[in-house]
Length: 478
Image (cartoon, rainbow, N blue to C red):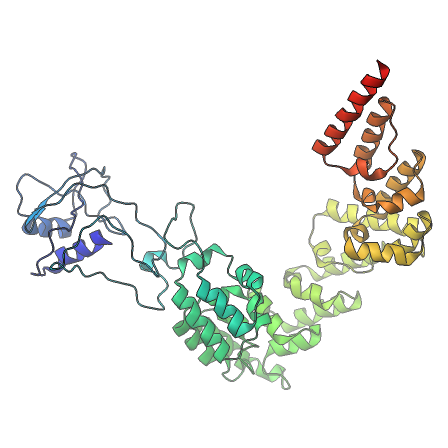
């Protein structure tokens, strides 16, 4: 920052006297560094010391394209010489609440004027705009401040855990906390609900003045009935929003009962308009896609009873080949898939074939039974017992039936009873091969476990348990 201000002072030609404590950071001329003409002509007139040549002035961007090796050199300026100190690496993150600590002694008579960032600005240099976090980015701001977390609770009723989860993105380290607070107040004034804020945390990264421009366009004719319905469109620039409004006005005759195609599609998909707007900003070609194609694909999804929330999560299905989509949904349904997923429509052939085989084998094993009824029959218990266990361990219902069958068959063949398995049903989710190896290893030292708990211990815990049994076995044999 000091160097940037010194450079601005130098170029501006100001006659104001700078303090003696200002440190001039220069580099030694090794024969490879040459200043740009616009900089060298000012540097020769401003620096009276003879025999010293400035190879480069440090700015946020290089002054010239030649390679320069940095070292320490001091120049006389004002009332004395500055002591040589090594320049700190400049932070690429924004300084928001505290000034950067510099090894510069300021006197009461010498007032150095810093160019502080104004409240609400997002970056201290245009170079940082639309720039992703890099591993080398290190700065003063390491987390979002407590006032932001507190206001998320006061304004939107979020718990501390929810607020911290909301601002977990590293992009928040590039934005001043004051700017985030202004955006929070703006969203609250315009009636944005907390559940929508949790779905769109990136909205907090946009400046208040930018949102004002976008919000002024969201409720224009042919767009949205409320700010909440169109909040997802804030992902676009103001110019893009105007472009979409023009397109919606052109095709408005197709939707006499709706403001635009988004409201029509939301009604067809049976989903809320605000959630559709939030999701459609990525597969945005749907906004211009031929309506007949959209209608055709939507009717296919309805015919095979694809859930509305699944369509909303995967709007890319409208980009796929409709014929292939229908063919795969048909095969999945015939194989026994009761709730087909849209990823089946675009996955590679070998994955789709393997998935259909699993559904087919499950259909053959279960017949007309459900997984709950099958487990209750094999473990000799009431279905309510399996339901209660699955409520706390949902992985049981996601496991393939063939895996559950093979694991139960293995345990029965080794002498375990249904009661022992019911006491530790977690064993059903572990690999059959590892279970068989552990049973064999324990039998080799003459031990048969009375409980299946030992079979799903971690490798370290099992090895420790095995070694203790081995020592006891050796002691008995002596």
